[in-house]
Image (cartoon, rainbow, N blue to C red; front, side, top):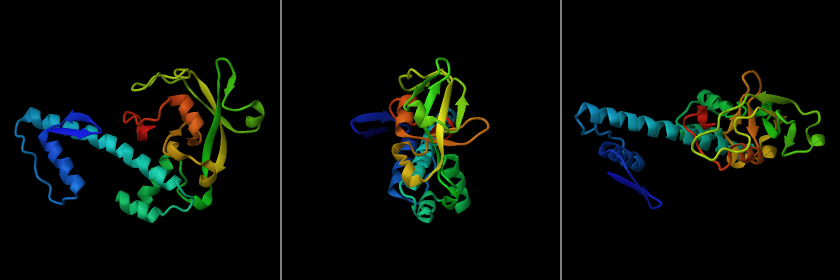
Length: 211
């Protein structure tokens, strides 16, 4: 079965195509796969796992962006849409750098970084980061699926503003993408920091929560 979107056609197993169509139609009845061969069924399972993993990443990013779109976003409606209990929703949003209890503060917002090999500060002046807390992330290999930036594989020290209110942070399309030192804060990224690190926005389902 071929699935087309935006002029691009992708070949998918017939059972997966029928399942996707039924899901998009909101049908409650789940039809069992028609394939009977072991190899065909195993390939179907692997394909569904890849699709499910990718969709879960998209779902969490959509949830985090919805929550970050407004300081008083309706989390009850968001939880219903995500089919999640409030506690589970809170854990997911917290994993994307958003406060579980919005009354307790905002987000740690990475606004600039320094390449430690040459001590050059990027995206800000020295006066702008004076007094700001920071953390260092070890070098990361160039990521697949996009052109590596000049900062790939280099140790970076990030400067962040702690507990910035969501309305002021203006996360936009970077909501849901975070930086995590092994022991330290979860920091959201400004769009400028994100673009400098990763280039064009993309979803990488091989990384935890797509970050």
